[in-house]
Image (cartoon, rainbow, N blue to C red; front, side):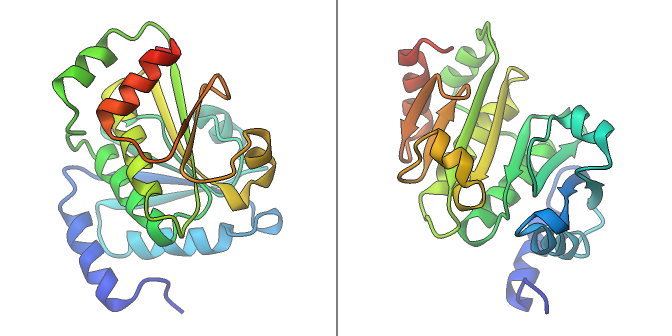
Length: 216
């Protein structure tokens, strides 16, 4: 049974056909040890069938160690969209279902080379970064506010090679949710626990939070 309804497939087809360039979606899976790897793979293959601009490259997490190391993938399922500018540091850990489907589509759009539409002040701040910055946004598929925070993080990553951003589905990785004390979502973990941002904040507020933390 298809995961996308015919109505949703038509809408997604329009979005994919509007991508400015083709995108390779590197999908890391290990179905015997992964709760939603099979469903994630099916979803990606359904998307790829809608447009020639999308190609899924599947990697076995245990066997394809070269690809795992190249992309720095740490758990599965993992989705890494790569476009004409190469790897922008966008990651989706866990099935991008429910509200998080919007995060997947934005990741594809940015990987394809679409303008991240950052404010001039944000672009100036990114240009002055002197250290790498990692943003991990913990989400659940039923959270309507989570995609907004993932998109904000993804756009920062698309705007600077010093920034990496990941969507992390909290219920699929409970050990990480416990480690970072994720009691509500979205919760953004900055540089593996150097700082935290609670809830959905806009781009200016996100940048200000990072400034206030002295992390960037």
